Every structure is written in C-alpha cells, then in structure tokens.
Image (tube, rainbow, N blue to C red; front, top):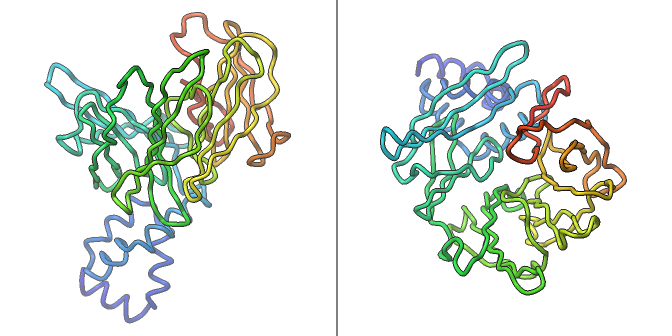
Length: 325
C-alpha cells in the first residue's frame, strides 16, 4: 500500500489527490487512511475535514438521508446502543448498530442534536458527548454545573457550529418560572475549542417550548410562547453562535384556534409545523432565511386520532415526501 501511494504521489500532485479523495463517499475515503502515513495525515487534517463537510453539504447527491436513534436495553444492564438508519433511493431503511461509544453514556442517554455529521448526546451523569458515527470517534466533556430542574427550572439544549471561529458549541438554557406566567432564562454556552462554559446575557424571551434547538444558518432556533391563551403569542427565538447575539423570527400566519408549534430543518431550510388541535397540522418552510414573507406552506395533513404527541418534521426525501414523528 505504501508503495502504491508513493507512486501516486510522484505521478499526481498533492492537490489532485486531495480533490479525488474529496469526491469519495465517507465510507470509501476512510478506508484509504490505512494506505500510507501521508494519506492518513491528509484525510485526518482539519482542512480536509472542513472542505469535505462543505463539499458534501453543497452536493446533496453524495449524501444519503440518515437518522441516528438511541435504544436502551434494561435487561442487559445500563447499556445504550446507537443505531445509524440510512434511507437510500429505491430501497428500504438500512440499520447499522454502533456499540456504546463510552461507558459514561448511561441508559438514559438522549440525542441533543446533530451538525456536520456529528451527534451531541447527554446522560443523567452530567456529561456531554460529541460522537462521529462514521469513524467511531468521540469526545466527552462535562455538562454545566447547575443541576437540571434545580428550583423547578426547565432545561433546553442546542448544538451547532460556529463557522467564523471553527468551533462546535453546545447551548443550555435554564428557564425559571416567575409570576404571571413569565420566565427568567439563563443561557450557558460550551465551546469545544475553549473547552469551557460561558454565560450569554440578554436572553429575555418567554417560555422556551422546544426542548432542542434547531440549527440553521449559523444560529440555533427555539419556538417560544409568551401567553398560551393568546393566538399571536408564538415566535421563534434565535441565538447566533458566532456573534453570541439573540434574535427573533416571526412564524407564518395561522388560524385563530388551539395551536402548538414545532421546528425542524430540511436541506438547510427552517421548517415550522403548526399543530391545530385536534384536527390537522400545517408544515411550512422558510425559503429565504429571516424573511417572513418567504414562509411557504409545504403540506397540510389530518392528525391521527391515536397519536401520543404533536407532529414534528423529521426529514423530507428527494421526491418531497415527508417523514414525521
């Protein structure tokens, strides 16, 4: 193998080898790590990883639709397994099982979000983890010191990428109920680069309804409600991970009746689902980020009478058929 790579290196410039490997599916180029030390160094470099993520995101045909789910098996002890579910054109779901990437990931582990192929998880042991299901690599780091539900607070998470500083960040929001239905929110942000938590001041929103933030356009998004009795009290609150600044986005116009909003993302577009209890749900997509008039209704569907939760967008396939949870 070393001889082959040496011959190729003499015949092809390093830039050409870089471009060839860049266009391979991740499963293929990972195999080439064992070809030689120089190829391992190239494929493992931050520049190659960053460029490959960007190239893949801009070339959807290179990417299969994939989901990661957690299944806990109590009969076998406190074991947590991660499954990678792939959906390819003209085929059924394929499921690949990953063993527990770290012993610190306990039975109650939860997926907090995903970004650029990385999955962020948490457990009841106040530890967080970034896991790459393709390579099996993981990074464990401590959760913020304030305990969940301390003093009756609610906890919300978010996970995304700060492209300006090339840094992955985890956001944790502590919401404390106050008088007259108001909430006091404290926001903590963990920087993987700095390996530390910091506080971001100025978050004065109402009740953060979404448990997990949705990462779109460099910012995390949560659906928030200021007054459940009012039909116009819903909006989207945002946190720009690079600037550390908060913002707001108006939701689509909706009918004046019992509703509940959930958020999602599809091919880089922000998606909002309006649940009208108990009859139907409307799915909207924001075609131009931050522009209220660009909200476009994707589909309207009847709600099943036997469901146990609100409808949330999961993903949209290439032919625009919708998967929901």
